[in-house]
Structure formats: C-alpha cells, structure tokens
Image (cartoon, one colour):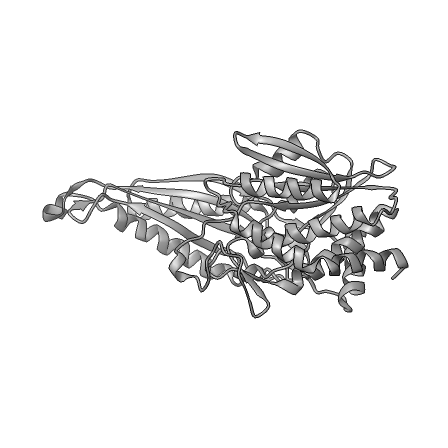
Length: 396
C-alpha cells in the first residue's frame, strides 16, 4: 500500500472502539419496520456525519421518515456511492434471545442485537471509512455519496426516492453493505409475492355438514405449492443461491373453533434465480393455483402483490475488480465471489445504470432470526476495505 492508503488504514484501526460503541448505539435505537421507526437511527447517523466533517442532506420520504445523505466533495462531479438501510425486521419473541435484542452486547467477539448484521454493521463500516477519508485531509479528484435509507425491509421507498429525485445522477459505481461475510456478491435472487384466498360457507361447528370449510380448501392449495417447491430443487442451481423456492409465510382464516370458516388467506413468495424468466414464473404460479381450484371445485382467488427482479454483474466489471483488490490488500486473500440469498437495492441501482456490488460485514444466516449477531472484527475489516476502495476511486 502507498503511504496515504496506510494512513487511512491506521485511522480506522485507531477508531475501532469508537466504531463499536456507535454500532451499539444504533442497535439500541429500535428501527423496526413495520411500522418504520427509522427516525432515531437517522438522527444519530446525521449527527455523526456532521461531526466527522461531511456535508449532510436530509431527504424527506414520508412524514417522520427520511433518508440521510452524506457527501465528500471532489473536484469533479463523478461520485462513488455507499448505500445501506436503517430499518430492521421485527424483534420477534424476546424470550428466544440470549441477550437483549436491543442491547448491542458483545460476547466472544460477537455483537448481538436486531440489526447488527442486517445491516447496521454495514452502515457503521461505511461511516468510519468515510471518517478516515475526510479527516485525512487528502484532496480528492472525485467525490463520495453515502445514503442511509428507509424501508428496505418492506417497499424500498428510501432508495426509490433517491432515484425518483435524481439524487444519484453523478454516481459512477456503487456498493451496498448488506451482510456477505466480507465476500463479494455478484448476483441476487428476485422474487414474487402473492396472496391466495379460498372461500367456503359459514356454519355452526355442531352442524359442520351444512358448511364448507375454507381452511380445508386452503390445505389443498398449500399442498400443491409444497409439491411445486419440491420440484424446483432440480430446475437450476447456482453457487451461493442454490435453487428456487416457494415459502408460505403467513396464514389467516376463520373466526373460532365453533365456526366453520368461510375464508382462509395465505401470503407466499416464489424466489426467482438469475436465468429464470420472472414473467414465466408468475404465469406458472397463476396456472398452478387455477388448476387447484378447477380440480377441487371451490372458489379461489390469487393476487400478485409485488415482484423484485434478479440481478447479476460480470466479474470483470471495474467495480468488482476494485473491490476484489481492496479486499485482497486488507484481508490478505482474494474473497469468494458468489450470490446473495435475498433481495436488496443493488438491482435498483443497476437498473439505473450504476454498476454496483454487494459487500458487507455479517452473515446473512443470522439475519431475520433470534440472536442476530455480527463479528466485531468484520465491522473493522469492512471499514478498512471501504476506506481503501474509496480512496482509490476518489483519487482517480
């Protein structure tokens, strides 16, 4: 590494304890979505960015919900984009956690809490890379833009607002700090979310033969989806992504044990892999559900709620090479390149012509479940990788 690069690395290493304290502060600020409690995290991040010397902009998206934008200005218009989200999924049952889910406690080299891995650690790694770059005093040819956004876990309103208001127009490449275990993700699953509803005829359970049980009808729908899911294992298999799946994630039906239910509703998704045609997949699902209703002769409705496109970037793209070299120089080895099992905003960036990659601290396997945690050393190492690639891009 050059002398200036080593200075960036040293600054980040010196900030290790402060970095982890700030991550703990963010974890203790509940930002569950729904309902969308990102405000306190946004205020903390905005204050931190101002403290380290960034120009800060607050972009209102909805009432009490906003994106935080931080800038390092260069001599030219071109910018590097650092992107991450502030919201988390719900905590769930606190009794299933070993530690306080909003505690940010550290044990055996791991910090525990909702949002540690997904993805407040990634935000903190980026922020402290930015701090080292700003406070180094090095003049830069190009600039950097950091975006901490709302609503990634539900409707992606934060990043959509950035795109709709042309906030990213000068960004030439981007990095999204979703958890990859400091490996490089160059492809991403898409998905389609559906709601299916069956109808029956209400009756007293003492005269159940006078009714028509909508939950029994739905059992046939779920069984058809389960059989379809089993068939998908042999369709396509990609490194890091494995095969497509169907998951029934929510069910609701009936009024109580003495009622024959006249309705039942499920929500499910079909994960889509790069190489699959998302429109053909959607048609498969509609055809499957239609066949169930036709076969068993009951009233059945299916609604598509939303879809997310797949994404893939070639490994010889400049943004991948920049990240790979920075990882090698910081970590002492070239990282694995694979896919990310889940959707994130990198596809939205790529669709607007910003070549982007997913890379961040934390393991996706711990996200969205009790005892979510992140290796504290990965938070520091992630900051160093971001600091190095940021320096190299901005020097031009």
